[in-house]
Length: 351
Ligand SMILES: [Zn+2]
Image (cartoon, rainbow, N blue to C red; front, side, top):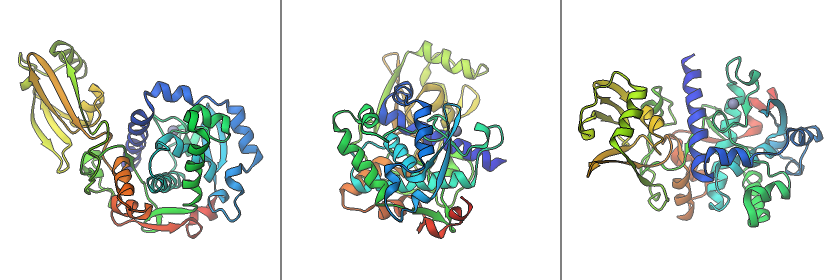
């Protein structure tokens, strides 16, 4: 049960943090993802898309069941993965970063297939296309749908995404021989967080590692302003028993930080709160932040973007630009994991 809760958190946070940064607001994302369900069903009924026509594709031998617009749709893994990759990382990123992202997403999908959601969550179908719940997905099955996402670069971007999937065909990140819960986020802020610090349960391969080279990311740090009265109202709305005095600089005390910088817990006007709760409540980029008051205005400066666990996408980009290949990127961010071949895993036999 506890594991299910943790997994739900991972899914939500992994899915939410990234598309918001890279593709605009959640509303924008939802509007882009407007291909009719019938279209998708047709893809599924045809059995194989052009992504799957490569001979001996291991991905194409796996069928993924996804709840889309209230209907269960089945895709060959490679076709589904291309749509997930299109939604999760800009096609402008280096090829090796895209390949690392493809493997991370493939592993996450396979993990989810082996650990499906509890009863009552999209009728037991392993995945859905809600970025606030499972995995974001963008339809790039045709040039027309790709153009809606990529604009003028649609053909080359689509080719690059599909190549990252094809060139890592069947490659799975594993731990102890099983697909890894390959969480990822946009920007770690210099060092990744452990699953234990963020979600309260340790996962042996989701531990802190350095994440250099992210400093050029647009949202590596970001400062947002709050007027004290509005901030007080928001905080009291969530914590009505908090005692907030005149000086906002004194509202948040006793901050306990993880070694990587995230606020694990703090005291807000006498109430114990977590950094993750404050992040969500105030719409902050991350739970690694400092609060300052200048000239009567509250400034909150965040470092990093997302939950900070697992692979940093901008860190992967930096490693790729420095010459690392996708295997080096993955093995750096997922401590103690290995890269295995899909055909060696039981999931093919179960599928
Ligand atoms: Zn879902």
